[in-house]
Amino acid sequence: QVQLVQSGGGLVQAGGSLRLSCEASGRTFSTYVMGWFRQAPGKEREFVAAIRWRYTMTYYANSVRGRLTISRDNAKSTVYLQMNSLKPEDTAVYYCAASSNGWRPREIDDYSYWGQGTQVTVSS
Image (cartoon, rainbow, N blue to C red; front, side, top):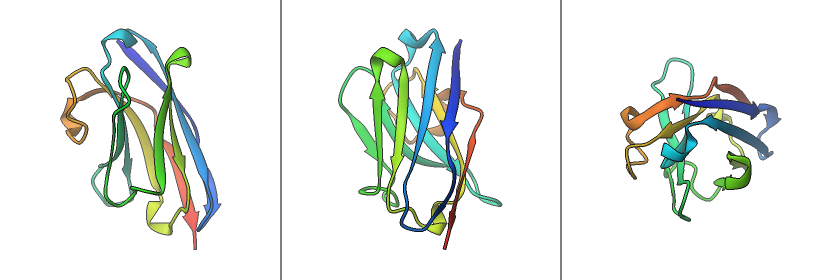
C-alpha cells in the first residue's frame, strides 16, 4: 500500500502562482511514476504531469507545458507541482497519484493510489 497526502492549493488571481505537495508513505519502493491529475466541475479527470521516481524524466499535458513544473524530493518522498502563470481554466481539484505499472504517464488506469485532492481556484 502507498499512502499519498496532499497539501497546498487555494485561491489565486490569474497570473499568480501556487505550489502543491504530495508526500508518499508506505511501499514507495514499488512506485515508478508519480502523476498529477485534475478534475474541473462537470468534466472528466485529466492528466496534468508525471515524473519517474528514479530518473529525471517528466511529461506534461500540452495545456500546462511551460507553466506548470513537476519535481520530486526523493529524500522526503515528496512530489511537487509548481504552478505559475495560472489561468482561470486551471481551476479544478488536483489529485496526485502513484503508479507501479511502468512509464505510461497519461494512462489514468495505471495509477493505483490517489491523494485526497486539493482545490485550486484561479480568479480572473
